[in-house]
Length: 501
Image 1 (cartoon, helix red, strand yellow):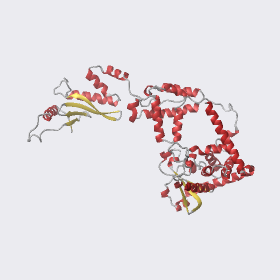
Image 2: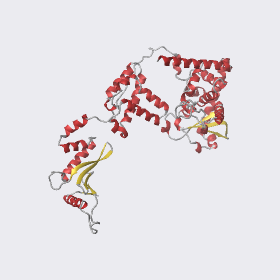
Image 3: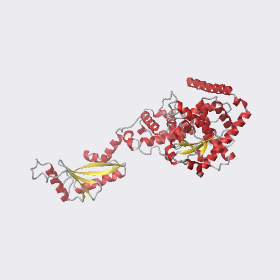
Image 4: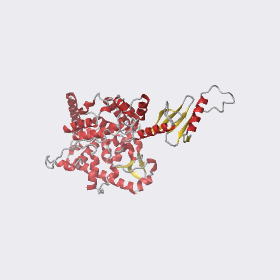
């Protein structure tokens, strides 16, 4: 109950406490014996008089660092002097002090302990600060953090974070407690990485370390790590070294950015169709080029995410799940619709038939037998080395997306940034909300279908031009030998580098 605690309230509390601890009551007294209770003071929020059989004591409830805490203030006494306990005024004064300390993030337990031992609060706080606090070693903290990153993020994110925490410059923290590592010490390590020329690496390390320290200071584990909030908040990498125009040799290829030449798109498509690659690889590269989707979306494609509609013959609607968007599930639960047209639709159809002959659970690119992870489909880098091994092809899987955006505007009439309809996954609808009529008549979907039809036609034209320029693209045996030689040469080089290291 809540009331203004007065001398009368206190006197009643003492009597009730005495009744509670009295002998065995008679039958007539059983109903009258009170039970333990609390009285909340309406003058000081959180102050309570706790009446129990063993005592009548003051307590204070308040919040510290967002958590509700209760502090015992001591026994209650009647009168006007705080002898052997606290009077009403004394309890209110002490409760107000505790509330003030909690508001400023100071631990009232130190203040109460100082009062109980007779030691000054300054001496008590100094001793408390010198006492060893629980924490994690650098090695344990890094292991726990990366384990959580692996649980909650994609494998690529885990790989990125792990790499950013591996530079030799961070070895200075081995054996240290994370609670003792200062921002200035971390800044010195970042500066050392920057000084050896790895400027982009140093910037990435700052990003990961800030996230690392924020995680260590979260309430759920702060009592174990003793890492305070905001330690690395102002951590920054040194500015990048200025480069004047003209200081570096001119490279004409730089003017094109990451967009591969048109002829390379044509060559890659011609080789993928030739049959000189493993069947799934060739079909996968066709699907990758024909849909301009990220490599992770293609290698993680499942047959149940593709829909056929009688209103759109020779087309397949691909509903890319939110997991494969760049921002993952942060963009909601809606799927991203990508029309598969021409050779992209044909490749998907063949891949779907292949899924009938193995226990792939519908994955168009099931994980291999040597896969050690829990991932049921192939890794994102499945197509990288095959593209690199193709004669006359030097772009990565992401190059098809750059080509779609660049040549789409230049050659296919795409409006500025219109390629985002296919590339950026900014819209989507769930498969069960889409009917064939909607797919074939909705203006937004119709524009997508036209864009993908123009894109696949453009790719077919450049494939024909590549073959006309180099008839070797029709020689299956020759291309098989060239690709195999290139792949084995790359693997041998990797093996030599590994043995040297």
